[in-house]
Length: 114
Length: 111
Image (cartoon, rainbow over all chains, first blue to last red):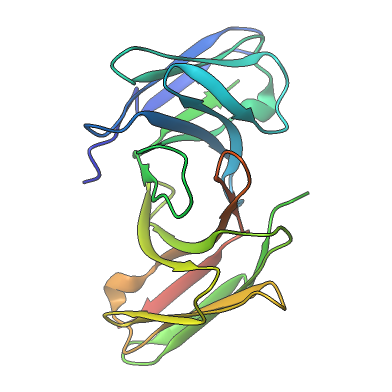
């Protein structure tokens, strides 16, 4: 166990709806990164939050947004869901953004959009 | 796409044999990491090799890194059925130290 908790574990939504995924980071970690993993692919970086501020973003549209709270837990929000948003969403927590920083992943939330 | 590539895509071996997976990446890196994933769930960190290192060992794992060729390899020795999983390499670098993952190798170890 990494100490990183994600909720819910599974979710089914309808196209056009909105979804919020949650992540509790490992104790003491101030950085949370979110990744999307489509079936049969490697995870793709969505964005990172460091000390409650967005600190980098991958090639994802603005309808993917996030938030980090003072306790460093984080949310990923996706608006206007599309079928292609069906994927495993992973969050990873780490201590800072320095070189050679190890990231600890949660078990993921599997989102299905129908 | 910045995503790296892994080779082979799938590998099936017998228990006790060695498994070798290769990874190529495209960006400059601070380090290269290897992860394991069981049945589409969370990623488990296996090993990190820094850009100034060429080889690293951890238990039955041996990782090499060739930054001139932008490639890395993971060797699992004396494989076990419990090693059956998907294995991903991830290049870490840039301002956010984000991880850029490869496409993964699906390893099946037959008992």
